[in-house]
Length: 282
Image (cartoon, rainbow, N blue to C red; front, side):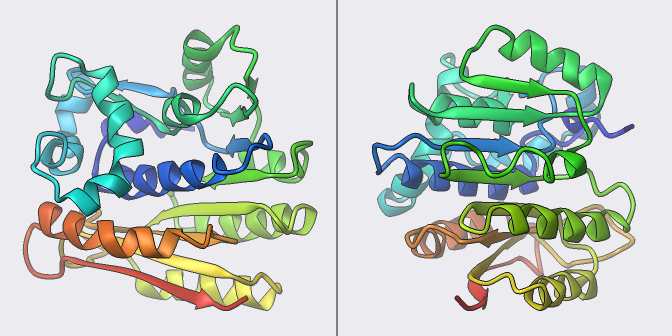
């Protein structure tokens, strides 16, 4: 309940998470049928990088700040453009002052027939969601614990779509809650796409998460990672990952193009790495 994403908005983790989110939504739009995006830990939706909180950490300087004005190779730009076009539209003066959280990014990429469900438990964050999305008939706002929501709001009536799971990870037990949450949601809706973001500070924890998911019977899981330096438990986050259940068939190929360039661009020394690999087969 104490976590505020404004301190981390636009950082290395957001780069990976939002590039992947935009790529998945772009794929979903290839079919005419409506889909739903369910963002379990929505935050406020939009972040002012000139604010005192964002300036206090300055994490965005090592994330979106290194990308927004970079000269991007054409093939990489084609993959990243759905995400970066939303960022640039929010900053018509150039540079980067405003950064879209996953709710704003998803909403801007969706079509008229698509829908967005946002759950958030932090009272101040939820009030900001009401300010940013109140009155939008395409967006459903629910003030509820995300882990309870996974057992209540799936499957969506559209029967197509994405569940984005991005908890705060303030305590290590959050990985256990993530495991319980994905199991609960997947049992209710086994054909949906699930994208789970996590920081990488302990490789054993991540490996256990994958093994436990496989033991539940979950199949077709793609692992994506982007790291700017060596992984250390006693240091600030330098690497993050995503596990995507039922990934679009185009996603691995897209990330094989984008992640090497992002890794080179965001690298802060030894230990910088990326990968895109299937860790649980269909």
